[in-house]
Image (cartoon, rainbow, N blue to C red; front, side, top):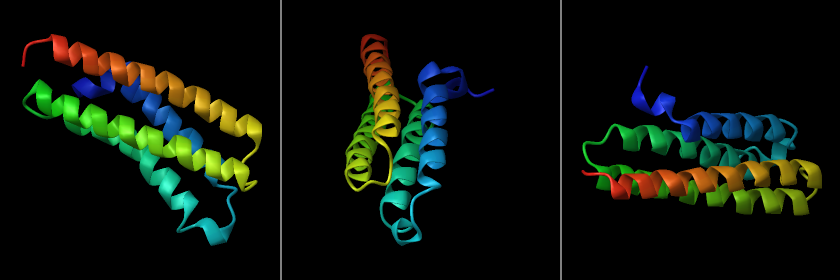
Length: 120
């Protein structure tokens, strides 16, 4: 098992991406190259950047990838708001994903702080 697979934040990021994929399955075909693709790529980017950062040889590099993961998470929040306003997802779906995103954001912040406190 790789080190990043033990991280709760990575595990929850995978679950978040799964949830995004499930929700976007019902998006219309004309959004395939729009919000569907954007949301899916941004949600996958969260766990991918955690994994990639953990494979770097220094904490500053890992921190940079955690920050990129956070940025990707924020992209999904914006895109989910647009999706809800366009009637592509329900208010309940948006709320559930928003809650997951808030939790992930907190965990990413804690991971970043932990990396900043530890030695490179």
